[in-house]
Image 1 (cartoon, helix red, strand yellow):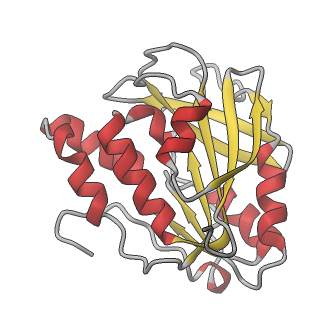
Image 2: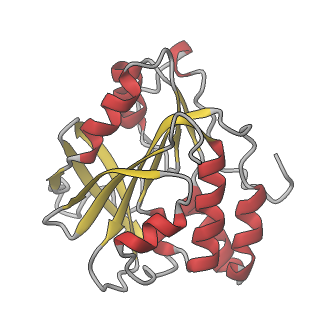
Length: 229
């Protein structure tokens, strides 16, 4: 790992050797009254699982943060090798250090996985919190890591909101997600349109796109199995 990479990486490729049973408490994990967090439907997750189901022990990369129950879910569904790289934590550290302009260069060397070594990527909504140069650098790094015929699932807000909270997406089942909000030091940046997302992930193809009632666009991107001319 490069010296600039965060120490917060949790390597879970050894998932099948020891399942994580408990999840550490997080800010915003529950309301003061103890009420459960809201649950919302997802359409892209089932498609994402289908893309990886035929692969033998697929390598899955989660852009974080760590959610113990998600590790269990994907392990049981896919028998996968699971790794978490908490990019939200990277953003927090750069905002607090006043080095946000360094994020493009940081993402260029952030990941140590070899090219075309990952079958699936859970991008969640992390790109909403990056400006264009940083988003381009992160998207390029993720595209490089993804195997041919691999899949990336990303969420993008369609609302013009400067909301200053991150969302931890907790898988309830293949059709539903629980949203857990916790504080962010940086607000969401501009809303990305479909054409913006396609430009970011040059080399990938949009397989599925769903605009949900939560004003989140769920997109499944695939890397062509064979080079395109």
